[in-house]
Image 1 (cartoon, rainbow, N blue to C red):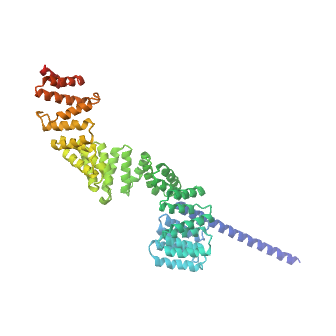
Image 2 (cartoon, rainbow, N blue to C red; image 1 turned 135 degrees about the vertical axis):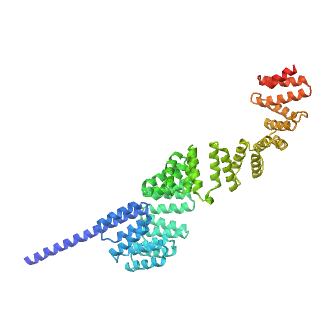
Length: 534
């Protein structure tokens, strides 16, 4: 009896030890699964450095678990370290040749190197080892095919995975990705919605739905889906990124900036995101803050020309004209000739005008117009600048092109072109243009005044009185507000005073000179004329 009791005691002890070992194994497996799941979340949300650190720490705890090497390699690929990932997969295989996932990883690397044949060898090996029953293996193969744009192969594998477990949300998300690669947005959204129903705590399906709607420019639906993603998971980095892009397209700068700041605070790729963030700040007209980021990026040797372009414009908008000019010059030196746009030369020309460098401004405005002739605003600016610089023939040419481009001249066009002809001493042409201005604006003094001036130069001794009827019109129109039109009236009265003096109509001449004195008591010509008449 005693022997039986001892035997039972030993048996219970053995069973207890076995149970403890089983519980320990289950606990370890559960812990490994949880850590891998967390690392995959980091990879999914563009936090690859965190994923790598997390998996390396997990390897320290479970150094013999070869599957961790696969997830580490995938994180390294996402971080832009494919060669390091290849070594990680090889090490995983050497740790455990029967773990199929590292063959999947090695095949993934081959896909990235456009070696589909070699990838299939490793994928077949993984499927053979798992006896085609491992959903994670099929998901990994599907994901690799998707990255290589081998959509049909991805669909075949993922449909098999879905057949093994129709309620695996990860498979459904990957299926949605495959349908989207086929440009089948409807099936993609359906698949993502199924995934969201199966895993309501996951933001990924909502984020993916948002991407589909962004692609079709259904911004309202995209915003709703992305907002749902961050409601489900406030730390879902990529949803904030896409919300930033969405508001950027909607030209809602402040909202774009706000969401992108949240993305940058969470992502492990702040340098890549900073350029986009600077663009968002630029659109939001927060030039001071944008310039801080542009400056940091512009100091790098590999700075892109487009970064320099936006930095130069942002500096100018902030009032830093010389700095802007310096950066523009760097941009023009660095950019390929074919990449420089007409608007770049136009903006640079405007900047040079702010620095009173009219000659160089004219040169750049001309460059802009040589690339794109249909720029009425730039053509007008060029004409005005040439006029200001007393380059009247160039001004005339520009104004004529402007009128031709518009198809119909405005009053301002006739006024500007007429004055350019006038100062270029082409009085007959000026006369013709000012007549057209009078036709358009018969109630304004300006047309009559400049027509009178043109006529005066066609009749320099005033013998024929060509200007007389036009100066009389100036008086008729300007007398309603003599204080406002004082200079025009003085000019008209002076002409008529002189004209009637030549005709020996002294009393009439005297009356006009007295009107000049009334408006301008210190007018020297009027005083001299009145002395002569008296």
